[in-house]
Length: 529
Image 1: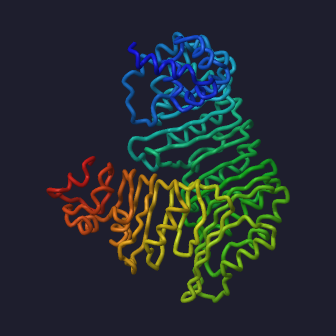
Image 2 (image 1 turned 90 degrees about the vertical axis):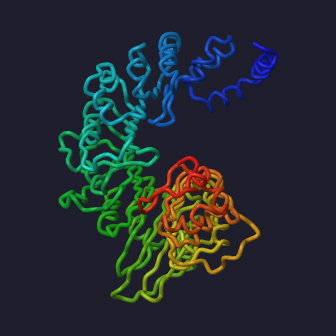
Image 3 (image 1 turned 180 degrees about the vertical axis):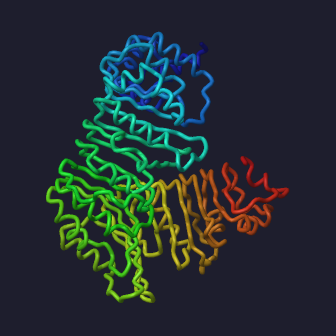
């Protein structure tokens, strides 16, 4: 070891325990255990402390597509020399498919009650559930809290049944299961599955109290609440759409044990009054409610504070916490209704004692319709839908995904307001066919520092210039671009000018509307494609 290494080690050892633990918590636990155990007594004391290793995360990949060359050596050493020293302190364990067999067979885990299975392919997980006796033993006899993350390398068959079979197997086989989180991903995008083809007798639990799940259809939510989960008190559900596939599902039986309900869906639905409100009326003892909804109403008015009070609050006398983001699109073709202004909506909330509510209204007098977005503050969701020019600003630190659309153009000054309101935005989708009116160069450019994905496929060419020209906007982390090929050719002058070169230099995924032969200068613009 040279002098610089000695100095670095001395500096590290001079740090207080609290700072070292903070550093350890930023690193993969596998790397900490593999690299620091047996270095010295102090590192042993910190890394093998029961408080540090009680929640043991032995995953190495950040995604299911990573390749770790030294994985076998790390797993082998941890299984042989470290797990025997800490196994009796482990309460929670996180494993992935490449190492699960070695980790579960290395030692027993007498205090293990929580298990997370991550980065599993569907077929791999099904094979383990059917054939691995040690995993089956833990699931049947010890595990009370289970987290399952299934990953796909390609888009799976829409009508696959393995996922629903895995879900129903876990419910019936895990005799002591209290909490279940069941998710599927394609890269970093969530996927859903449906339960409508699973027989009632195969999807039952008398112990489960909490379920977090992503389903294909709202009917799957009703299916889960038909009595098969007798002790369920917390349901967190994300529904892809609201198609009516199971018309005979009972949506009237009361749900007295349900204490917390969360329903999230970005899908535009016209079943709010006919399906969602009747479901909420069944939850007479609900204490906490979360709704993220995108609603279409015909010949009606906006969902506002009066509606929330009359149709929700009075039916839930024990409700003490309500987080919501409800966007209403009105189509009043047959009747004329006087619609409230944004000031009216704010006044109603204040009169009902709800001062921490944001709202934006865009009424269309020419057809009697309009748009209204109401949401609780501080904003608790990572998605913000349908932002338009009625947006007045604010701070939305939790939002990572934003959709924008309007029939009036978005000007540069409006995008300044957007980037200030959404400082941690990663995914932006914009729809606007109207050209900008004020295109002169602004003295200030905008920086979306965290933006990874940009979708301007359904936008006027002006918005490609707005986002891709570095004189207007800086996108230092842009990795994915969805754009019309014709638009791309126009703004880059067939990939010869420099205006968009900087913002395109890091793009790894380019989605366009047509196949094309890459012109001569294409690779100079998109060096990573």
